[in-house]
Image (cartoon, rainbow over all chains, first blue to last red; front, side, top):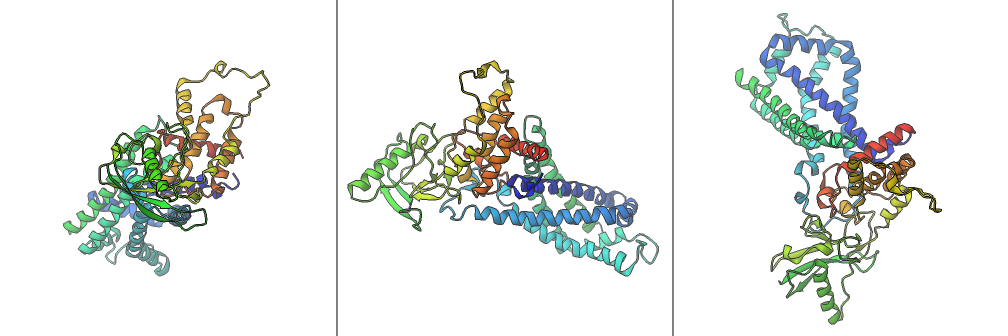
Length: 224
Length: 248
């Protein structure tokens, strides 16, 4: 195992593993958020559980933060290394003849997702951490005794500019996943006659999950 | 056909190099791309100028010597062909054609359009072989049963001619399609199993030392490969590498 992360394939695999972890996280994030459309009470209860259960807060949350930071840093490191592998550019390069825009521009879609994530953290995660661990209010309730999570969510999606910003972020997420999903499987060696169905599933995941997030944002904006 | 050619000219490895414009006329659509360059070179020699240096050997798509990045694509706009098999009928009268060397830090330019692809040779030396006793007692390869699918896939991988179009086309200058093919052609066969662990570890190590970039699975290499080498070979190399790493 020694030195595997120093090799080109080792770095590919590390990127893929962090991507798998983040794709599973996005799926569970979506599964919880969609509850806000169908059942605000269930959304409140699940959000309170996720926000207070020690295993999620102190084990899975740090792992998630590590996964996000690792994926971004490794992405930028690989981009710099790859740029160095061709010191003189072509006078004419027809990249669209042999590859998709998404595959050639992962660093840009990833960069926009990073900007979106920072805004998302400022909107939701930092206030949450402040309320629970700095103010010390672990109750998850408003002064009237009701859970605060659904009310906070709806309140955030009132301004149209934030809804538009989130929709744009999800479009970049879709573009990133359209290449990233199948790329991750390729990186761990899963591209053979047994994995043909993965390509279609990957495209469906890359389009439907971001579309679902867009639906949630629009739903709360236009229903309140 | 009358054409304007924009060709990379570079006197030697240390020269900075630049694109130079040339005009060629009365080019037959039935000529190969290299024959068109032959016409240009005759023209230059007759004028007392230095001809354009470019690599070629068999001129029938087998040797892998010809290269060239033509109008932004390795081996030009046709699919499944090397530059020597590219016909001028792929272009139109009056076209401007950009002709550049394969670009990669690991493929330094020697002169004009000629690049040094010996990095591929060094990767092959690192493990792209099987050790067989050739004292006269060698078992006939046909005596060893091989699954038909595996035999077909191994043969497909072995059709790689090592031209370097994969590296030239990849936005990261990655050599993983070449190395993937060379690892796969043995990984799929019983004869390749004995040295499988060392082979993939040593070839990937050499590939990294040569300064090729990291594969990001854009698939450009597969599209531009004149022999249609599949991305599945890269996936196979990745899993072979992971297995070998876990073995230690």
